[in-house]
Image (cartoon, rainbow, N blue to C red; front, side, top):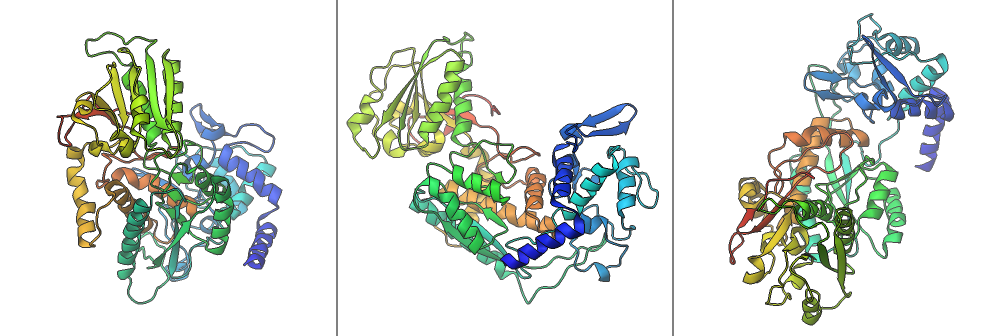
Length: 541
């Protein structure tokens, strides 16, 4: 395999240009920066121009180079195997995957006609290209670098894709909840088995044509990458696992306290990491490959900060110097959430006091002591899980407000006594139970048909939704198995989905990596039962 990769790299270098030339072309394509260091300028006519990233090819043609669609606007693929392919018939095109915008009947570009198209906006047959395509006055050296890069873009062999199988991994951190782990894997294994049960017979190549689109039926193979040891060891483990078991993408997954090493690995390896079950995702929307359902407890931080700083019901402003007292476990993700809320609260002029519960302790007295000594003007914020919420004292402290993390506390099933329920507000980054009731019929019915016991409804539902999104996206991609294109197609199709489980709406735009962006502050409707009522509208911080 290493010998093959080396030969492929040598062939690409000699066929398409030197490494330095293609790297200069990559800077033009991805960053809008010329070899001189100046910003790329594109002219759209009538005095309208774009510069830098706005002019970069990647902005429209995307990282994959396979283009995209926006309503009636189709941005065609511009990678070498499409641009340079001669006029052909269906029979000749059987090995070329179909993508929107590719027309097998047009004449092939040459280096000269491609340069003319980039500079003058004309196709090889003289047709004027859409005015959305800027005209770029590139010098010969810069043009040669860009053309060389287009020839190498996605020309390499895609890992995890064989002639009859697509390989996927799911990643589980060592501190992940074992019950949730089994629940997630049961859903994935059953979903993959269902997917494979529809495949009959062998495979056949597909044809690429503007009228007929065939696709190969490939089996799905799931690899479970169970991590061990401390987080600083995980990236090395993942690199070894990827080398031993090449996969096309990572789907779902489960984390305990941190997912950061997995996020870094996927970004560095250019490996799509789609919709893991994590409560503390990495907020780095400049990264491309990791995609999340939401910001988890960090979204709750913003919802709480908005609640703490908004006017009171009577219309008056809350005291700017009010104290916020936070309680959390030292060894849980409430620590990171509390630190984030502390920054937000202090920036609003509030005083913050953090109270930590020791690692491994299950002492009711320690939980009780953590909520003593509060003042009427204080706000109490609880970043606690159900076992700790169940140990809160019967007497509710006299405070201005009590906020609870819904993600950590168990949402509407939080084990709070009647007195606490009557005063608590909860950060709730999901649709309310009544709002999601119809959508939840789909995963719950599937679980029942597949005889899967519901032991962790949200994890199982999110896993089912993630697998469904993967299946729909791959169908839309046909056989264009390019990792970047997978992420781009997920971006494009999410907003059209109606069955989103706990989320009222999912959507992604280029540069966004959190599909659900808002939530509620809610309270319990009564001292008993699980009914919730909104304390405000759906908010997108």
